[in-house]
Image 1 (cartoon, rainbow, N blue to C red):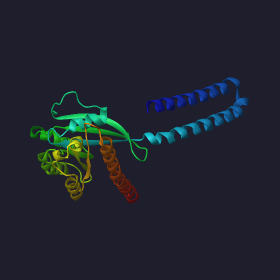
Image 2 (cartoon, helix red, strand yellow):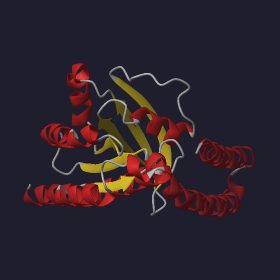
Image 3 (cartoon, one colour):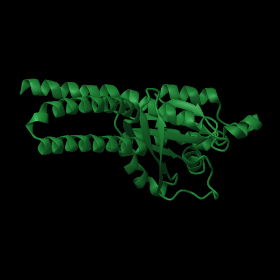
Image 4 (cartoon, helix red, strand yellow):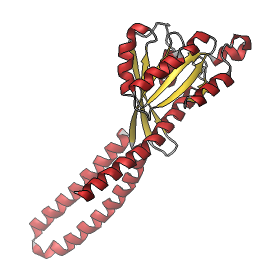
Length: 254
């Protein structure tokens, strides 16, 4: 993006330099050369207009949407590991409970070539940070509720996290249910406490997206954020169109 901006400003600078020299040429050599100078100016402008149009077409690829996503769920379900794996492609050196919230960003490209900036907030799972966590729910356009496939208690808490999110966010917020530690049950199936089918049915009944992942191996990490971002964008487009239609109607009435 920086390279495109730099190229854009260099072209603008060159354009103004050409115009400046043509103006100086007219001043120095008088009116006789105005017509020929004017023709040269038109040629220059057409040339740069073509280049600028090409740049504008390429800029369509870098139109940026900023989406805030919150990671929530009980403590020790692997929220921080998910955040690190997605944004840094690594895991934290030490396993320390999150205090309050932790924040990271990452750019992804949507299916329609739109560059999307995800602001991801990793929230603490402890009750004493509930007020801080809830304040971040209000500003989010998407949420991921994480549970541990090997710990039934963490799935039982999902309904409470879901209620907190829906109480504090707009009705159009996109929520995804994510079961972490898939790598453990892939190696040892008897470690699984929540079946894929049961969690999938719960998600469907409550209007949630759903996927199982492994923060340890990175399996499906990119997938869940891409699916969530795409769902948020898809939901936001009709909303933005509705606002534009309302604005047009208001102008017509006035």
